[in-house]
Amino acid sequence: MAAIHLLQLVLGCAVNCEAKETYIEAIMGMEESVQQSLMEAIQLLMKAVDQCKTLLTENAHLAQKCHELELELASLRDEKQLLQSENKKLRAEASVDHVNPDPVTGASLLGTSSISGDPVVTSLSPTVANVRIGQLQDQVSKLRSEVYRLETGKEEMEMKLTHAMSMNQELKQKCDQLAQRAEEAAHLKDELDIAREELATSAHLTAQMEQLRKRADEAVELRVRCAKLTEDNRVCVERLRELEQETRFSGNLRSQAETQRMQAADARLEATEATRRAEALDSELRKVREELTGTVREKMLLVTELNRLRACCEELQMCVNPTRGVEEEIVSLSSDANVQLSPAIQSQMMNLQEELSRLKTSLSTVEGHTCCVTDAVEPSPTHVHQGFQTETAHEPISHKIGVSPVPVQNGLPEETESVQSVDRELSSLRNQLSQKEQEMTAMEQKYRGYLWKAREVIRVLEREHRRLRDNSQSIHVPAGTTEPAAQEIDRLRSLLVEKEDIIEKLEVCAARPRSHIYFDVCQMLTITIGKTSQTRTLLLRYVTPTFVVGRLVFFVVRAQELYDACIVSD
Image (cartoon, rainbow, N blue to C red; front, side):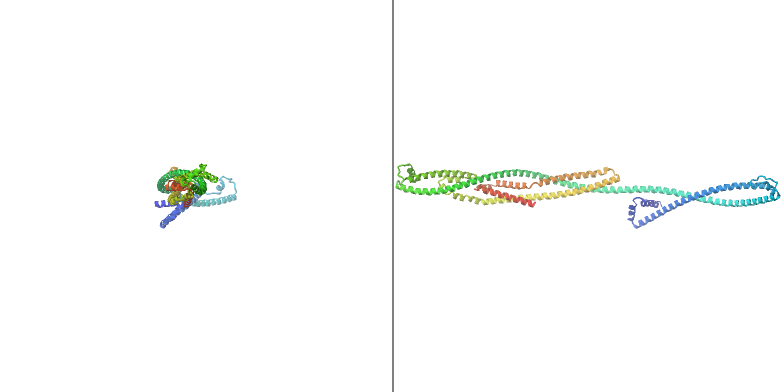
């Protein structure tokens, strides 16, 4: 029975508290039998409450009725006292009548007044006395009837008093019962208030327990996430260490490429200077060739003239002295003034000697220019020097000029092989560059994914931290319980900022100007061309330096095309 009363009390507190909707929904989610028993308990509780209310109203009504009865009883007591006093007077009069049993005579009646009993004058006429006696007798009869009526009223009042006293006793008993019930109701009300307070406290503690349980689950999840993030961070740190090593290696390569680029720039300047010198030498060579062509024409004319003069000299020798040679004859003819030659022949011989001296000087000049050109173009200029030193220098020089392109034609396969080797090196470098770019892109995408995951985790942690902080403010939980989560979030945020800075630095290093690739390719081409002995000999075999310039331009154009291809592939 006490358990039923306790259940009723708890149900009453749950139904009448502030969070009654929550408890009603919880009750609605129970089984039907449990709901039926709860409904019966609630109905019994409501009936008990209604009965208590009716008893309280009845108690108030009975209290009011008791008050009215007490007032009526007081009035009846006053009336009873009056009747008792009057009854005493009447009894006293009756006792006086019994003590003086004399008959009432007219004289006695006349001797006393009807009202005050004062003696009156006895000197009355008999008629007046009889009338007075009749009046007094009527008055006595009236008084006797009044006494009888008062006695009957007294008995009735005694009966009413007895009934009122019994009713008063019953009302007192009912009042005592109602007071006891009121005390019980007040005690139950106090217990109900205490139960309500305990229920509210239990609900608050239950909510706090649920929140603490959720926080514990969230702390476990955060601990698991932190362990996972620590593992990911370790992997990221290892990868960053590898990337830093690669960055240092790429920095070394970049420094080497910078030095090679400077060397390439110096080589380009030297090539430009060599090109300029080659152009100057080419112009001088053209001039020398023109002079040689003119000299060859003049030589041919001189040779024909010498042949003609030799024929004339032979004819003259045959005439003068057939045993002398042509030159001795000419010298003797020129020195001997006694020889009988015509003045025309002597003047012609003088002209021929002057022309020969002039041709020798021009040939020496041409020889000097040819030596300079050969030193600048070919490794050994002995062929031209020997050709001009011998007597066969009088042969046509156009034959040598026509034969000179033969080594160039022979060196073309070597040049093709060197160009192919350079192309192969360029293709390998391009493949390495594209592979490195793909690795950098994949690594960048991977780190971007890591950063995205880290940002999501930090956002979740911030939301959880904010929610925990709001809950702590609403529940008045000490702020020290949320400090580890806040410190963990700050640490993760700082790590994320450091990783973003490192990735930005790597992106800046990877996004350097693409023009460096062009200079690197040109520098490597120049170094490759400078290190290849076949290409060097091929270039040294070229007669015209403009061909070297043309090949350099070809290599530069090829490097530009490779650079554009690299940009397109990126």
